[in-house]
Image (cartoon, rainbow over all chains, first blue to last red; front, side, top):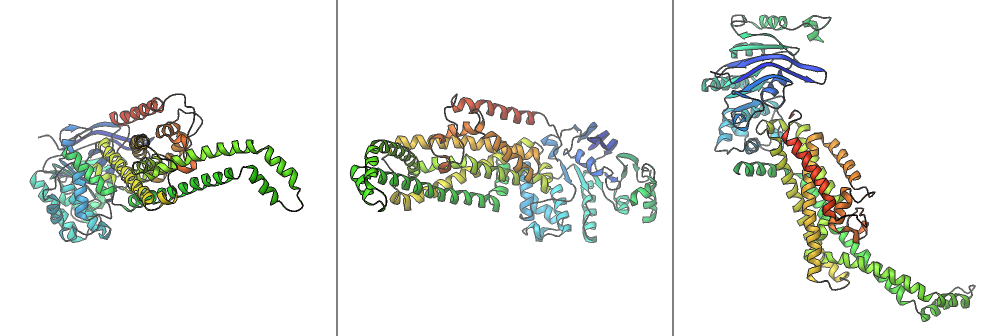
Length: 251
Length: 322
C-alpha cells in the first residue's frame, strides 16, 4: 500500500539559506510518524511543504499518491494544524469552522458540531474566539484539521498550550484517527509523548535527517525515562561549526 | 457553482459586517453628500453673485457708483472711465456667467434621482472611492497573511486565484453598496433641501440626466471592478497591509499624473466625463482635455496589461502560498 505521504530528497532554500537539505520520510496509513528537531531545524517548513503551502526547491513529494501541487480532491482528504493557530478572533468557534468548510466548498452537515464535541469545545462553540484560552485555540485548530475526516493528518506541536486533560484528549484522537486508517505526521518537543505515540520517528537537525526508523529500531521503545530520551535526542544533533551540538542548543 | 457560492458567502461574512467596511461606507456616503451640499451652494452663490454684478453694469450703475465715491476722489473721471469700459466689462462678466451657469447645470444634475447615481459614481470611481478600496484590500487581503489567517484558509483551498477572485468580487460588491448608499444620501439631500434652496438652473431633459447617469454609472462600475481586482492582486503580492497602502497610493499617484492622456487617471476622468466640471467640485481628479483618442481606446492597453499580469500569476505559481 502506498504511503499517504512520501518525501524524497526534499530541498528548500530561501535565498542562500538552505532550510531543508535532502529530507526523506514517509507516513503510512494507520501509522503515526513523529518529527523531532530543535527549533529552526526545518520541521515546520517540511510540514508546510507536505500541506502544499510551500513549494520545495527540489525533491519529490507525493501526498496520497499524488505529486505536488495538491489538487482539490486530494486536499479534501488532508487535515492539518500548523504553527500557532491564527483565527478570526471576532468569530465564534463554530462560525470559524463553518468559514473554513465554506472555503473548502464543503457543506457543514453537522461536521462542525461533531468535531467541536470531539475536542471538548462544544460548550464554547458560540463564544467568540477572542475569549478562548491558548489551549482552546489549539483545540479549535485540531478540530479544523479533523473536519474533513482526513486520510493524512499533519499536526505541528498539537499539545502546545494544552493542559494534561487536553494532552490526553489529543492522544485519544490520534489513536482514533489511526484506527480509522489515517496516517499521521506529528511534531512535538515532548519526547516521551512522541516515543509513546509514534510508530516511527524522523529526527531533523539543521535541515538534514540525522536519524530515522521505527521506535524499536531507534532503541526508544524500551528507553524509558525522560533523561534517556533527551540524551538520545541531543546525540542526534549535527554539531554546529566550531561547537558541540549541546552547546549549540544552549545558544 | 455551489462551492463558489459557499466561498463567496464565507468571504461576504468576513468582510461586509466588519467595522472598517461599515465605517468607510458611511464616511463616503456622508462625506460625499455633504460635499454635494457644499458644491451646490457654492456654484449657486457664484452664479447669483455674478448676475447681481451684471445687473449693475449699466450707465445708471456707473452713476450710482460715482455718487458713492469718497469725497476726496473726483467723480467725473471715474464716471467717464466706467461708461467707456462698460461694454468690455459686461462681456467679461457674461463669459464668467456662462462658465458658472454651465458648472451650476452640471452640479444641478445631482438633484435628480438618476443624476444622484451618476454623481456618486463620479466620486467612488475616483480618488476617494479608490483609496477606500485600497484600504479594504490591504486590510482584508494583505492582512490575511500578516495576521496568519491565510494559513487555515489555504489549508482548505489552495487555488489562490479562487480565493482572490472571491475577495475582489466582495470588494466590488462593497463599492457598489457604497455607491448605492451615497446615491441615496445625495438624492435625499436634494429632496429635503437643495432642490428648494439651490434650484436647478435650467430644466434638464430626461435624456440628459440618463446620459449623465449611464456614462458615470457604467464607467464607474467598470472602473471599480478593475480597481478591486488590481487592489486585491497587489495586496496578495505585497502581503503586508501598510506596505500595500503605500505602494497602492504611489501607483495611484503615478497613474493619475496629468502629463499624458494615455495614463489610467486621465482615461478614467474622460470615461466618467469629469472634464466638464471643476476638479474641486466633483471629483478631486485631474482630467486631461483634448485627448488624443477615445477613452475606451486608451483604456485597452491598461486592461490588457492587467489581464496579462493576472493571467501570468494564475498560470504559474511563482512563490510560496505563505
